[in-house]
Image (cartoon, rainbow, N blue to C red):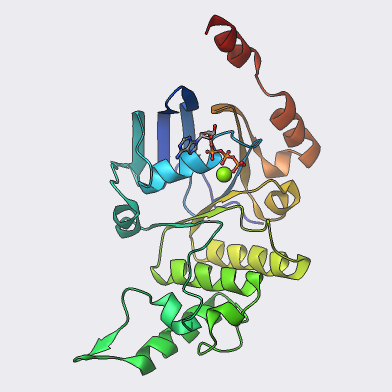
Length: 260
Ligand SMILES: Nc1ncnc2c1ncn2[C@@H]1O[C@H](COP(=O)(O)OP(=O)(O)OP(=O)(O)O)[C@@H](O)[C@H]1O
Ligand SMILES: [Mg+2]
């Protein structure tokens, strides 16, 4: 795969020395993250490592205690996910919050149905929904189908199509393949590569290293809220990353606990 990330380029996202505590729990300690345009970054680590928290801080769903975020080189202080959406950042949560009793087209344009005078411009809505799905090569049979009648994998495709319809520069996927079949996982990974072709940078949180190795450029490991390693996929192996996840720098954490 051609490497679209040259050092001369400016990162699309830079997070520097991010700290976040929930009461006595230090969820993130001086965490750094860099994402280049068009790059696919895997974010891995054990349960409670701080992966989701870090991404929610990026979107403004959570607020950091300290640290800096730059988007395309400019300081960003998103107060909520609406503001990060306006800056071109979309996050797809694991429970992708669709309206089951509405159809595919309605879900993709939820909260912003195109209008023609007083009425919803249904024709435009369904045409555009169809266009987004085709662009992503997502195989949902019909934009008129109710979302609750779709399989989990296809519902996820709709959630992704919705995110993409905002034409983001950055897409974050939190555990997207956890509940997907083998086929649905393949389709999702293809969709990610399709987005990459369009220059969209992506962060994928996953416990499945094989998915990250299938599409990723780089992988970053968090452990107990700290950066413990980072590897370029093409210069690494699942085994090596697994070792970082399991045995990454723990001594500082243990010492801190002993002092406490
Ligand atoms: N809203 C919250 N309130 C209190 N504690 C929280 C909250 N969100 C996260 N935490 C805590 O922060 C730590 C990091 O959690 P986080 O969800 O970011 O981990 P994760 O790496 O995404 O784990 P998983 O792989 O299980 O999803 C955990 O100890 C968690 O309990
Ligand atoms: Mg999580």
